[in-house]
Image 1 (tube, rainbow, N blue to C red):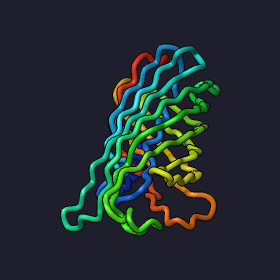
Image 2: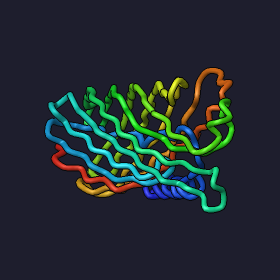
Image 3: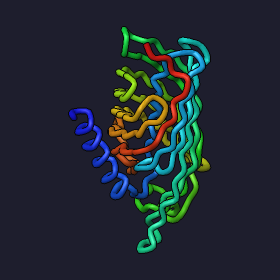
Length: 232
């Protein structure tokens, strides 16, 4: 009962973010892929929707301690009431990392990776006035992501922190911002198929005099297939 209550509270909050979190921003944090791989040959694949747009994720255990993951994100948010309220993006990232079981049901992992994509936005407020119309920007980021979690045949609970150096550039303009993105990911189902809900925040560090607009929330829901995980 407690597990169901936690899941539905998290799911409800994520859906609220999905409905109201579609603001046009120059930076939107991507879904945090928290696979909690346990063994060689395990494969996880999922689709998600929420504040990060439509996202897909896949992770694979190369060995009993080394994993790789590939994440993609797409969004097309165009307000029919306000032509200056636009956010569109295409983004992909690749990462590799180390994972290690802790005891019978715990897992620690850490991944490092690189992401690349483009953002089209028409939000006002740029320091360069000519850019206060629709414009394309390049989005790059380097990140490191440690996490710790608990799993069983019904649930996964993971706490991850994604540390990202994000670069937004266009022509001679280049803005680099460091983000800390702590998230909690909760999965429920049975062995191979699970529903996912993820909640978190995107925290910008340092001073920013260039009115760097971003979405401070992470809220996503999805469905995951997990194959070849070994249970004790």
